[in-house]
Length: 246
Ligand code: NAI
Image (cartoon, rainbow, N blue to C red; front, side, top):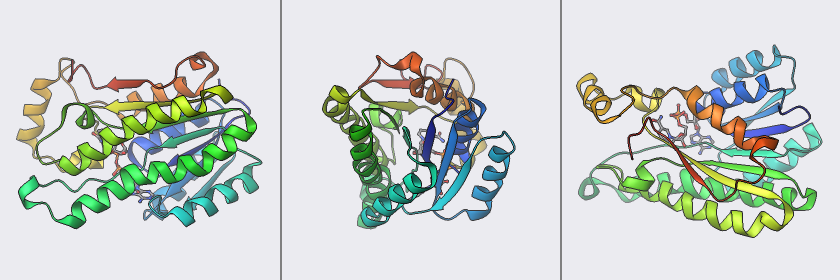
């Protein structure tokens, strides 16, 4: 489905990003993986992707760093010729009640989850507009739609990402570049593994489909939004949450 395309995935070494990277490779796309700390996970994911017979390279970069992301995009273009798919997946959380939250907890979450997407989209978007081709997918969260206790920083960043997605979609549509957001619910990754078992049980009770999502549930939609089948979809926010926020 994605033969001849290259996808750049931030935070692609593990969790949801890793599942997206593998699924893109299954569809025959070449993959550029951006990671920050976990070099071994990045190398492991790269090995698995190369075994599928597509090109894959890994890049260490902090998406919150404007200058570094510019250099990153230049390097990826040099290595792959070009790329057509950008998945802004890198994200962190620093959960605390608002009254206990430190300034730094707010700033770092906004810097990675929101400004990181701006940095990447600005540099990649310039290329996409020039080549009149591109798919941008931002990984938001249902927290950005419904809010969540202990996540005023994270929910603000993820809600901001939705406004960012819609504005980018409007600005880039004339050049056939689409921009959409995916809002996952609770997905079984390192980010949710830290939850106490009893809290996890309570969460599952609230989910109509009665299970946490798998990273592949997000990856499937990412591949679809990157494909020709989704050429007329832009500015959308699609929930993949088992019905949590109906
Ligand atoms: P994870 O913690 O397993 O993976 C996040 C990845 O982002 C890691 O590889 C990490 O190295 C990378 N990363 C973090 N900060 C970075 C930075 N400044 N520069 C470059 N890379 C950076 O998390 P998970 O669960 O796979 O989350 C992926 C995305 O999905 C995040 O944006 C998260 O907010 C979002 N999400 C996750 C949900 C869940 O239940 N797991 C629910 C809703 C949204």
